[in-house]
Image (cartoon, rainbow, N blue to C red; front, side):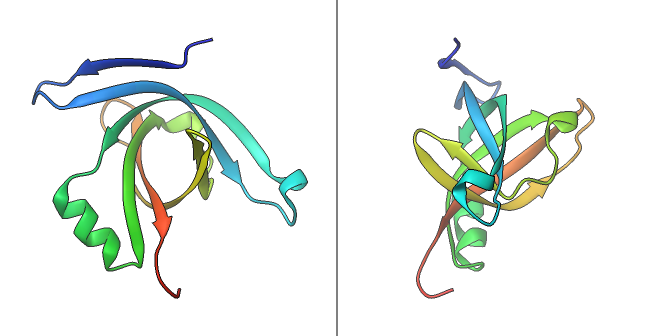
Length: 108
């Protein structure tokens, strides 16, 4: 099973291909609908971190997945943590969609 593979993009930033789980929460954890996919994982930049803070979120990662694998799930499980998808971008011209995920901060 592929866990992690790293490389660098054209700008020299490190990105990782990893197995993540897209989650649509149910009434209980047992009723969650989960979809495992391979994603490119990148850290978020300073601008994204600031924008997420305005939504009471602490930005963590940008996940890039194939558009047809994403079904408007609200959460992602990655590295044994559950993150909230607070913004999406796409589809891009390469058929992929960007999912920005983080953790809630403060009183929301």
